[in-house]
Length: 481
Image 1 (cartoon, rainbow, N blue to C red):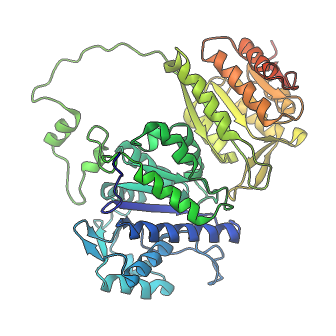
Image 2 (image 1 turned 90 degrees about the horizontal axis):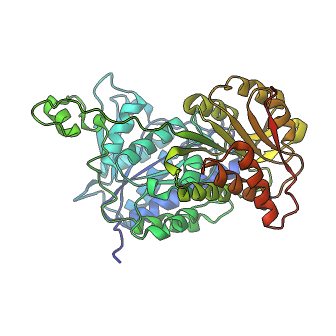
Image 3 (image 1 turned 90 degrees about the vertical axis):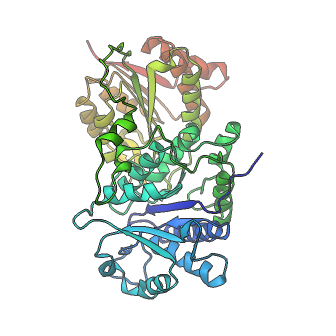
């Protein structure tokens, strides 16, 4: 079986952290990026790396760590050049590619000026300048995606999520790492850590692996264990996954290119290129009626396992739900949307964007204190029972069922059911094993067109069949009247 060659591939490194990230986790993130770039450069990779300012975790403390990783990656490149293990340029172009505006020189930090001058003098950087006035982050990212072969992302927010969408749309591999350290702008819906969770259950969406049966294992081995796993092991896991890619994975997929990828800076798209993109002929053909597909029922899966709380096997719960859906004859009627490391803003945005019929929360519960979500640093943040009830009151139309697969969540179910038809909560503490079995039984029945009441009974019975003593812990609450 042939091995995917890293040599000559242009690898895009992106990510950021919130300024509230603990120094130890931020240090771990920088060490991970540094060692990863060195390893990939040793194997002959070239890179896409952003160049600009470098915000610090403590803005008025020069010795504090940056909350972006671009200059750390560039430092690793310089070390490889000085050691003679990487070439400044070759048949695949310069070692580093970047997209910038004419103001790039003004953005170079004084502390990085010497590094910048070294890379320029070594002729190791290829800079694509955007047309004056075209400075939006979205446009810059689209130009970067056009150049890249593989995307590796670490935490971050909307920018990282946009990059991942663009790479996936072009069938280019995306490798998300699960370290939860927030984002520079405190935006997005979980960034790379959320996508890392999705990659466990949908690996083929993120990369085409030569041996598809190995995909789940390869993605699971990327885990950082929230900074507890040695950096070198994570680096080796990333390289192992790249080597396992299908040989064609690094190129654009002709059927999935974004129209914007055809727009060159300073240029335009012709009518002919639009026709070619859509496969139109030279003459217009009369439109043919197409049958209206049945409406899909959306399940919104929300997961929260803060770094300062007991670790839960939420990825297993999601995998088992997804497996049950895949085996069902009516699987095309359902779609699962996932949000990991959920913060309060993520919860609201997901409900607004997706209009789900079923909302499934898995994580920790605090009884009368509320449900345990996460803050920007990945630590526990309580969402009160009253606030959650008022939120779901705003979604009584699309949402029909809420499953709170968390300890002591009956408190929330009692209140939320005033607005939602069916709400499942837990009357006591619930073990990982019982929570997972309830979810499996519940969705096995639901995706096979059984009622919510039946699905609840199947979930409880799944616990009982495993001889677990918690079959009476789940409770089903119904909307009055």
